[in-house]
Length: 436
Ligand code: ATP
Ligand code: MG
Image 1 (cartoon, rainbow, N blue to C red):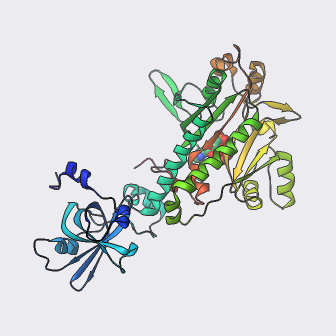
Image 2 (image 1 turned 90 degrees about the vertical axis):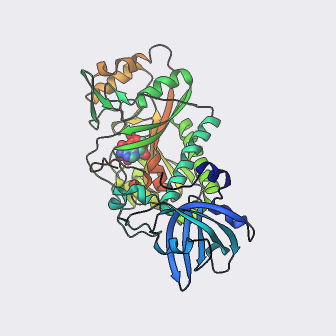
Image 3 (image 1 turned 45 degrees about the horizontal axis):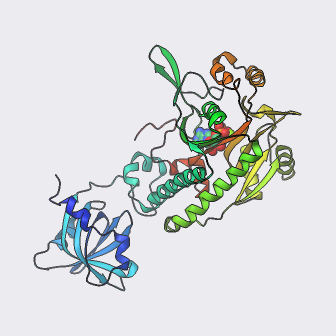
């Protein structure tokens, strides 16, 4: 219901707006899309029609027999959905050099008064835009972000498959903490208490000990109470784990992976990058020990942190090494979780990768020796009994292994130079937001 358009026929005949550029004068097209704007000029009406591929000007003249497009264009509201059948016409005045002269126009779905500004450079603030995210998604710059994010997701999978890794699925409901710490959402699981997963860490390790190279795109939940521009309470992670590897092996995989992703975005999303005004460069890589980073950052007058990099230190690295993935390795063991391999002298096989002034990845060589795991769990006030099956998994032939986790949204935000991580989440979950 809603219109008398036959969508089975329409889908056979439809022209996408971007393809109009390649059509000759006089070719008949059938279009559908959203009304971006209308303008009146004497006896002429202009309508900018937008579909997912682009926008085109539809131009109607008053008094054309058997066609009420002119009247419809006079009253149709912005963002209403319309169908247009008409002919392509070369035009110097029209954006892109082509316009469509309608023979028939139908209103498919009328839009009410719009609660937010949906113009290209919307003046509506982010929280309000997120309240109406479904409408915000009508905007081309917003669509561009999510098309690029989709490329990033596909590129990660493509890289990993060509790297010989297997995609895995892990449980999201867990019986005890996977990382330690208190940032867990509790759930009721029949008579038991359960938690939403904060990472697939333990599972991917157990899997790498048989399948060697594994990856996942995994949703994580973290009950962090602070609202920041770089944290979400529900986020997606790219996870990788490899057997017979140390941290240097997987840092190299990570650098090639990020470079592959960015190259693919540059190749496939040139149009979207232009819409949002982003010029991308394939990042270089740099390796530094935590101690060297500390010396450098402090010599520049910034605070570093003892066993974790401060936000200020990450920012400083971004300033000193733009368009570079900075691998900070030989990280103090105190600043890393129990599953990271200690190296002696208070150091560890753990690392972080910093890109454009922010952490994108944590990773490292893991502990595959049960006694060391038990010791490190206890040192962090955790009970080895809660991790029994995980610890036991390393008793029956477990190779040394290493891996990492990279935030999809964090990476997307930094690639696109956006200031708030919520810009790159369709329906973000933060402390104050559970809808839409
Ligand atoms: P940060 O120090 O930035 O809070 P983290 O060290 O707690 O992050 P990890 O557990 O190392 O995070 O997770 C691996 C990656 O996942 C991070 O480097 C980041 O890219 C991403 N990530 C972690 N927590 C969040 C979050 N709350 N929201 C969005 N992305 C996140
Ligand atoms: Mg981290």
